[in-house]
Length: 179
Image (tube, rainbow, N blue to C red; front, side, top):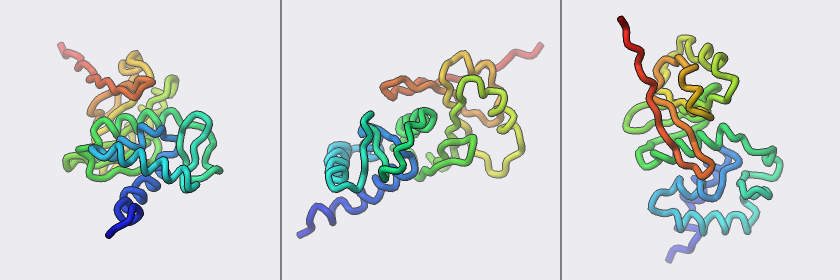
């Protein structure tokens, strides 16, 4: 008969991997990486916290070790919410290379989830206009919808905002009519 460790070994390894990739996630975010197993993931996380394999800061965010608790990266957290919004379609995900926070394969396509902090629109546009080999479709995560008009980014599949509760709202930029 298998014990709890044997049953949840793969899930525990995946949870630790996700905490290492995306430090500062909330319990809800970590559990949503396991669609249809969220209750088991919550129990597993509680067990890992109790054993000291994972650490939680005073704001309820989880880290792989105490030294990693350098504060929450709000841009990364918002990008994780976007990833979780379609996690059931994701085949693989990992940390991206700046300016992309997360790279993922979903439905056979490569996606880059790119945060756009207010005031950094011009810089990010310049970076993303550079020719890039194997660039995927880009999901641009803006803090406010007013930023969308400031962005001219190739391969932008769409734009989104993330509410405090993790709700993701998607937008498309209206194409300008040519006369």
